[in-house]
Length: 326
Image 1 (cartoon, rainbow, N blue to C red):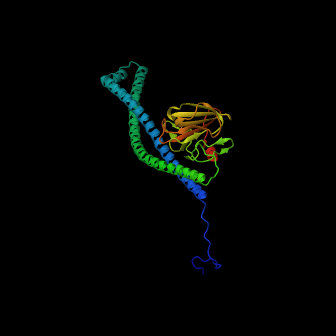
Image 2: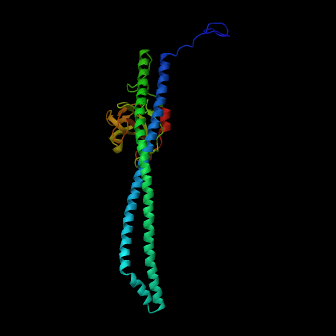
Image 3: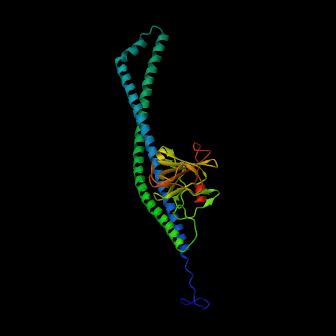
């Protein structure tokens, strides 16, 4: 039986060599990025659930408003008919009894039946509308409670996301500093920390960012048409492909940048805090702007879209491409 520090062969045990600092720093960066991606997925899932409930609440409120309007209309009709029926309750029967011929009597009876049937239909529809309103109001209360729960969770996930994104970028900067200290040759990305990687003619629009596949998830009044890439405010954003760069107001997207790619694909960038340079023809990896939170944004991030066929064409999910190039 071997003793401590002695191998089974009797020779002194040799400790495994410690990983070199660069390898250790890369591992820390990989771990930090994985945790940041997980936090991004949790955050966007919480946002999607919250906004989906918001859409359902808005839809129910519209349906309830329409139901109330129809109920008031039916009540007014029923009240008018009740007044008319009260004033003429004897005359309808007299019209049947006083008919001079069986044919006139039958016609008067049919007209009376139709009037009563119309009244019954109004009452039946009014009862159905009131029942639907009760059900819808119960559903609305339930969904408003659920939305409040998701609002709180959304806030908690935002706090976690901020922490994990900060940790990941700090690990990135630590690796860059260490690489410089040991004279590792690398071309930095806009001074942030990594070499620009060009894959199939494309560069990652936001190296080091945390992101998940949130394309197509619910948003207020629409579905998400891009991928949200989270990074600290001011982090440089890069041209994903060569093409013609323009800037403009993106509405809810805030400050927007658009690259009409030489390959026929338009690349859309939203929520920038500032533009870098003037409109121009750009190359992959060229800095075009900086991360921000302009427009309708819940955290500093880049909303990135790909639209094959031009700016007005339908967006496709850029997640598979981003996973290859980032």
